[in-house]
Image 1: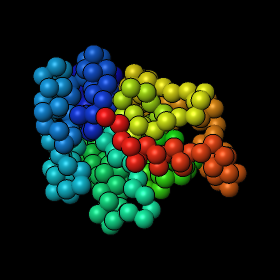
Image 2 (image 1 turned 45 degrees about the vertical axis):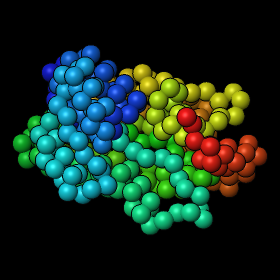
Image 3 (image 1 turned 180 degrees about the vertical axis):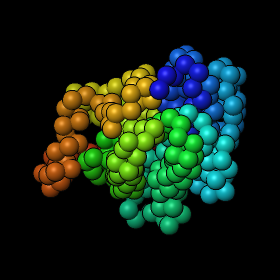
Image 4 (image 1 turned 135 degrees about the horizontal axis):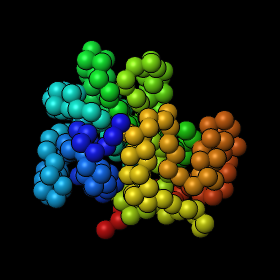
Length: 262
């Protein structure tokens, strides 16, 4: 699919990572619908790139349904919105569980299905880009809900892609690793061990463009060693857990949660 002239929706557009996607797509000539919860940030971004704003809280099912009705006839969906900071095990509430599942898993599915159904009925090309994470391949401590929802999102994306084989609708799963300067990793203030490499918001935006244009099954946006580590973690979880304990991964995340960034 050509990005120039395509009508594309981006969720989570009020955040730094989503805004990077929006600016890149606008620079390629896309007509954009931007969605999120922060009206002021969305309207400022929309004024910059000439986008339509739809304010929606993905934990509110009626608002998700309304957003789905707005975006289902567009050419592409970039489902980027997500939450990623888990509470301590002793502090988890049912409301927090619901919020993570609704935002990271239920809403992307609820937005995807009417879009897919419309394009199947009309036999028109469509592209769904689901922004997951390497946390959907391998687990880390203090990330149980994030891991659970990102594993689920990956399963949904890859299975739906099989269902749509031979149709004009493409589904691509994008898996960022540690992204510097913007996004949940930066917002959480997690300190990485020495030598761990990161990628940039521009790298994720470039992957989104590749997904829309070519429709591959998956695109990792992570250094080779992080991708390999995630894959090995999925296949050898006990070994991976021992390595992460030795690196102090759980303590780093707990410390970041206790002392959020300014």
